[in-house]
Length: 118
Image (cartoon, rainbow, N blue to C red; front, side, top):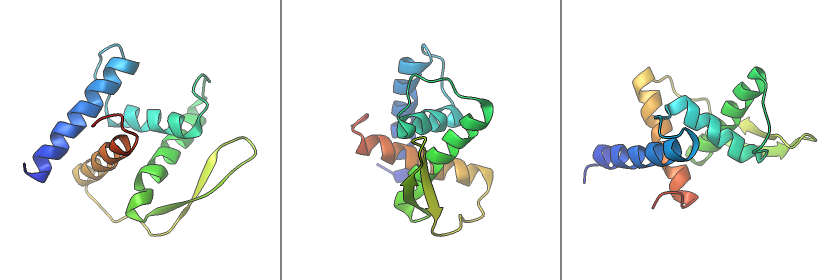
């Protein structure tokens, strides 16, 4: 199977499973899935977050997702339990579509590692 087709199928499996679990079947888009990963990584699942905290959660998720690619490295957890990462390498300048593909690949890999999808 071609790499693009495999990514498409795996992405749809992740999207469908998360949508059923967290959005009553409404399709979750990329940003919403990144947000959910941030909440998962923070580990404070039953908490309400302010708008700026939601952006911080998305940043946590992006750092965690791109860590295996060598862009970020986990640094420490602060006194409030929030993980912090340091930049190892600047992200390449990608077009919007290329960014989406990179994030989808990273998300699929994340959920394969977590054995959320097989």
